[in-house]
Structures are given as C-alpha cells and as structure tokens.
Image (cartoon, rainbow, N blue to C red; front, side, top):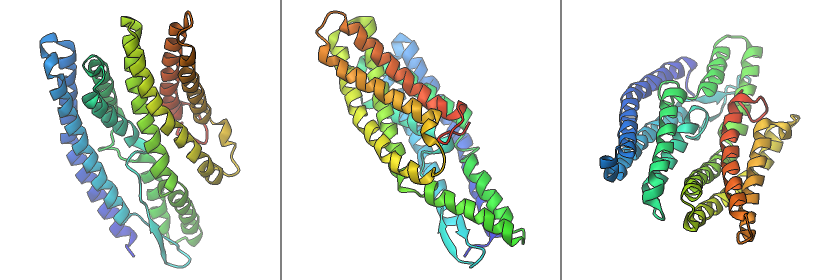
Length: 322
C-alpha cells in the first residue's frame, strides 16, 4: 500500500513532467495548426495540405502518447484505501477521453479523417482541416490537457488524500466513500471505456458528412449529397449504440436523480432524432423540393451536435459540468 505522502510527491512529479512535455507539445501543435491554415488559405501551398495535416496528426499523436503515459502513472499511484480496514480497494483506471481531454481526442480524430478522406477528399480536406485546427487550438489554449489535466479528478482525489491524512476517521471515511463511488461508477466503469469512443467516432463521421453537405449546398452536385449520406450513415450506428449502452449505466450511477431531464441528455436525443429524420428523408429525395429539406436537416443535425457538446458546459444537470 502506498502512503499518502508518497502519492502526493509522485503525483506532483508526474504532473510537472507532463507540463514540461506539454509546453513543447503545445508549441508544436500550434505551429502545425498555422502550417495547415497557410496551406488552406494560400493557393500555391494547397498541394502541401496533406503534408501539413500529417504534421498536425503527428504532433497530436505524440501528445496523446504523453497523456497515455500520464494515465498509466495515475493508475499506478492513485489508490483508494478503506480507512476502516486499511485495505486498498483499487486504483483509478481513467480513460484518455474525459474532462479536459475530450476536445483533444476529437481534434485528433478529425485531423486523421481529414488526412485519410478519399471520396471528394481533395475538396472536403480544406473544410475538415479548418475544423481540425479549430479543435486542436481549442484543446491546447482552452482545455489545456497537459498543463491543467483532469481538473475534476484531481480536485476530488486531493480532497480524499487530505482527509485520509487528517486523522479524523469520520472525515476520512466520508472522503473514501465519495472517491470509491467515483472510481467504481465513473472513472473505472466499463461504460466510460465504451460509450465515449462510440460517440466520438460518430461525431467525427458527422463532421465529414457536414463538410460534404456544405459542398452540396454551394456547388449543387448530387455526388456530394451521396458522400454526406454515407458518412452520416456510418456515424449513426455508433451514435445509436453509444446512447443505448449509456442508459443502463445512467440508471445505476444516477439513481435517485432525474437524469432524464438533463440538458445534455435531451440535446443528445434531439440530435439523434434530427439525424434519424435526415437519413429517412432521403427516401423521398426524388420529390420536388426535397433537396432543400435534406440539406436543411443535415445542417440542423450538425448544429444539434455542436450544441450537445456545448450543453455539457453551460446547462446544469446530471450529465453536465456547468
């Protein structure tokens, strides 16, 4: 069993190491973002867009590996000990796509999709590249996964360590119960290793679908609509599966809370309904005026996706950090 003092010193060392790496990685990512934007904006640099995107993907991947190392270190250090028995109940196995790391994972996924997109890839790549740059810059400048990692986790675990060192058995036991509940029903839950990756993949596919939709609207060619439909169809299945597997976990983790009234949950359902309507509207695509209806539904669906993400931070509720 690791002592609280040893855990505190080791965590400080790990965070300092990540922050030092992060300073270099932040610069590399931002430089890559500037190079990608230059290739998008300057016509004579456009042939180098894929190369600059590869550079952005490489920088983001190295950063993801650094975060992975940090999470392994957390699993080795962040134990929970029952003060009544002195026995270790387990360690935190924290997924690499939560809290301050969400935007970073999404940026990496969109950058990869921008790089590998084939059908209409050359035409969609500039749009996807701008999206990847916006996400990457937001992750580095706002979320700060390297210099301010996992703020909610560290706030709770620091409180647990403080209580465990206080000598007050009641305070220590209450802190233990809170930490153990978070460990079992959130950070280590199977749901957190399945639900977010499914949704992130679907969101990435929807971003590509939106890029193709924009090309359809401005260039009025049916081939773009077909590409948009294929990517939306690809994202719809993991979106549906991710929402379905989340319900049993929500019933257990938020027992006693009216989680079904959460703004994030309701916005997610609205997004799913809109994408369902969009996919089904193509049945009537040959009818007069349906092109406009399909385009409007496609745009509204993507707007709902963006609002679903934003709702997490601005609308209070069980599924929110507001």
